[in-house]
Amino acid sequence: MKNFQHIILGTGQATGTLLGKLIPTGDSIAVIEGNKVGGSCVNYGCTPTKTLVASARAIHMARRGDFYGFDAGEITVDFKRVRERMNKIRNGSSKGLEGWMNGADNVTLYKEWGAFTGQKTIQVGDEEINGEQIYINTGTRPFAPPIDGLDDIPWLDSAGLLDVEQVPEHLVILGGGYIGVEFSQVFRRFGSRVTLIQRGDQLMPREDRDVADAIREFLEEEGIEILLNADAESVAGDEKEITITLKDGKEITGNKLLVATGRRPNSDTINPDAAGIKTDERGFISVDDYCRTGLEGVFAVGDVNGKGAFTHTSVNDAEIVLDYLNGGDRAISQRTTIYGLFTDPPLGRVGMTEKEAVATGKKVLNATRPMSKISRAKEMGETNGFAKLLVDAETDLILGASVLGPGGDEIINMFAAIIHSNIPCREYRKVVLVHPTISELMPWVLDGLEPV
Image 1 (tube, rainbow, N blue to C red):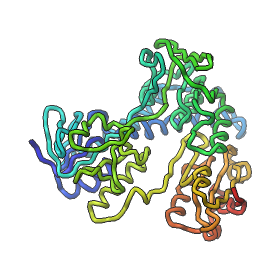
Image 2: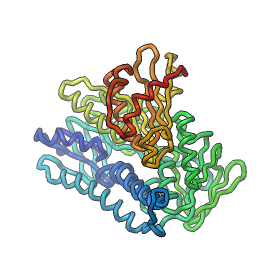
Image 3: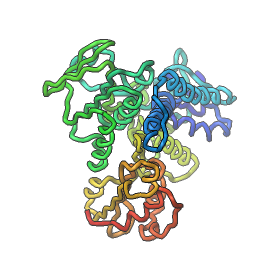
Image 4: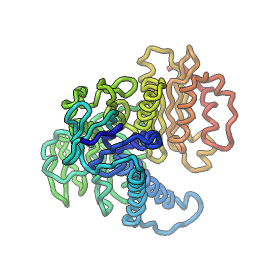
């Protein structure tokens, strides 16, 4: 049996962060990956989807030429070239990570699936190996709801949709979360007819209703059909045509079906019981504030621990583990929730939503400013959305922020720094920012604070 000082199960974004610090130590490292190197972000998530978002936005802006004073002629989409650009970027990232590992003398990359056989032993292919420190980074996979007939039709998850070689004539999407919403706009701009089916009464149920309604409005303005309070009862069809029957009897027929109704952890693929590793009722590996599993020297990082569902939280998990191993005190509980929705315009969110802030019992102040009242947004011709700030009336600290509008995915990082640093609003209001920008108006938003 081979012995390694470190074994990493999975090659999502936390793995690159771990290797960046572990490789220079000279310690022996085994990395196990049975699928594409790079995990979901590089291969099926952030990298390819944001590449498509960029192409879709460029196409959309070209179609708006008349608004800006030029004529681009008839705009046609060469989907083959769009996909070539996407694949070049995502495959390059995957190959780059694999090449880095293969080029390190102290790293052994196993292109096999791995599963525990004991507390510190893992079966990988035909070989059993042992590790002093083990890092579980096996991520999540798409979850399909129990809908009659779904198992009998060629439905697509987000990875499958990325492999479609022609723009769907009619794309039907089950699920009004972030994946479904982003893909709906992208493929509508590529030329698909799009129908989005959401069980609840608003898109993106984690968000405040004013945010969700604003996103719904600009999606519908682009021609996306959105069905709320719509519950799929059954599906039927084949490669050419798929029909979804809702519980109210309505039928929607398209030629491609994307199921984007959630994800489940891959903990069940690694035989955690053999190591005595505990999972919760949803299958996520139970960890403490430092990503420790309760088994000495075994950590779970990234989506599989249920403490975050984003690349940036996965990377942060790895940083927390490395800090812990070196005597530091970074912890999951110190992390402020932050993420983006990469529609056009994008949404940046940090801290609490309004409904979460009110639920704490704090005296909450709220201020919003529509993008239509921000000069730079008007000059850019991009006035959809608004900025919304939530403040604790007693401490003068920002509780949360939502920025839906041009640059919202970037501007939100400023608020993350403010919240992390406990900067009072009265101090932030004094900051002088560059004109003309969207972000320069963020301190001015505070002038409109009112009790919720």
